[in-house]
Image (tube, rainbow, N blue to C red):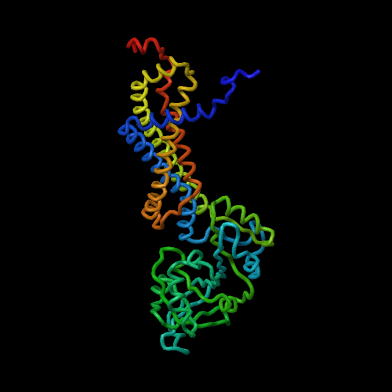
Length: 404
């Protein structure tokens, strides 16, 4: 038979008593409570800010590297007798893939005779003539600044497209050696083929573009006698180096005798830079968490010294040490949860400003960072409760006699 009152389920009573004890312990010393929450909140804020920057850095680094130009080039396969590519390959390359839109441009290079036509007509035959590289080009409408030099994009937008006259962008070195000025006539010859254009002089870039003349691709193909052909196709593919490599492998079957190659100095440089940034931020997060744990541990040491009598009383009335330690660990976890929740929200807000200061664009809040930061703070708070282990050795009789 049941033994009357002893058969009553006392778990709700014990649970209520447990949380009542926790509440009184937490608010027993408000000054110490503030210090612990401040330490945990500050640690969580810094952790969340750095983790959010770390997660956002990969995309930001990729974006910054795209401003340096294309990161994939498509050209003749190594060992192939193919010298030029079929222009139709350009249309086979998708404009988008999983990581975002793809910027594309195709080029046809050749050597032509260049002379200046200041007066027009046959007067141009008396001007200085020299050979120069002509670069016929065409591009998609997606972010052309990532596959063309910024000076060429600006000239195209401001001076080339709005006018009906045939224009060509002349590199600074070619313009200087031939004395080509803005809007001068330029005569291009290749054997019997000839074409003319009005010059738009590009500012010095410091690269091979300074020795080139940029012209419309169809007219360049006619001038060089290479209709429907291009020398190379350049792409700016968003994403991590791994994603870029997988994209190149994905499109390779559609390229025929051509071959896609990631530009190693960009992809490898991007990967190295992200590894360094990620490593630095991770190390900083570890240091911050260690310092936070030390601050909380110092406070917990004082708590352990103050609560000897409480623990002695709990043990004297029959409380097991396991339950006593569970109370203190629950207190530490609760403080970590509150401090982490507040600090992580503040840290993510701080990271937005830090991202703008570092990358020039505000960092986007990453939702995964919030629970991770809170969880790390709770773990730090629980580990920082290590000094409370000494309470397990307290003997109630010694405490009441004032021996400890």
